[in-house]
Image (tube, rainbow, N blue to C red; front, side, top):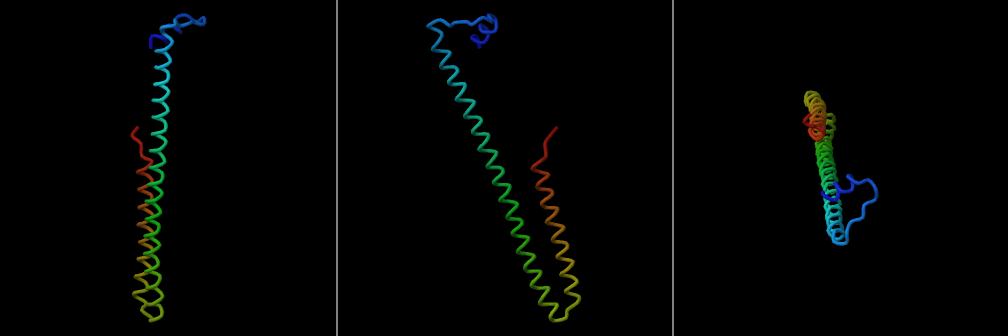
Length: 117
């Protein structure tokens, strides 16, 4: 910090004495290391968050596809047997599943984007 004051106080090129060169070099090296370390840590945390979010959304998509497969298989079975009431219930359940999973995705994305202002 003292070096910064000296440099700004005297705009002409300032030469540090022989005894001040070494501490300035150590200070700048430690500062550079700290900045690089913090940046790398933030970058790694960001990508961990992105990876976890994508995994969460893909697992929900997989769960929806599995449920839809069961509903579609039941629809075909009940259509072939002529159970019209159950077919109507299954179609309503299919629409409800789509609605619920859409809301689940929307709330999750909104929660990830939420910022306190």
